[in-house]
Amino acid sequence: MTKFDGTFRRATPADAAAIAELVELAGEGLPLCLWTQLAGPGGDPWEVGRKRVRSETTGISYRNALIAELAGKTIGALIGYPLGEPESIANSEHALLVPLYELMNLAPNTWYVNALAAYPEHRGVGLGAALLGEADKFAAAAGLSGLSLEVTDTNTGARRLYERQGYREAARRKMVKDGWQHPGAEWVLMLKRQR
Image (cartoon, rainbow, N blue to C red; front, side):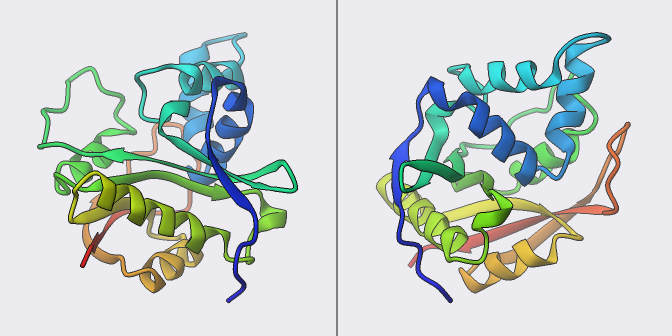
């Protein structure tokens, strides 16, 4: 495996466009599907995504993002944060997201990797492993003994990466499509215990 030789930095609101693109890549089309529904007829789904990234409170907020750079150019990102105790899922929550929240509730007190992505031309150079290594550091700094993430059952490349980094399948939930075009059938929760 190749070692990533770029740098990492905390994101700022100015990174909103790149983070939105990377969240869309990580989410395999789910973010854009949701943003399109939120934008409504004639609205700009990408602006919805950028606005969510610029928010101080959403999970995909720039405040939760670590940017990977090579020669001063953004090439990937990690978005993550600590999960607390399980929370009730609001009846008003979008049906597409309910299985994801159900799985998150099975991973209390872990550092949650919400999104991990690299632009296609920067894959296969050790960036994913390096970003997951940074996630390990964030979990340790937060005093958490484990990490969690969710992946689609058809994303075998990502699953191989996660397994090489010590993540193991813990649970599954059936996907809700509701306009999202995806070949998968289930979301997979993967957990990693820190030493």
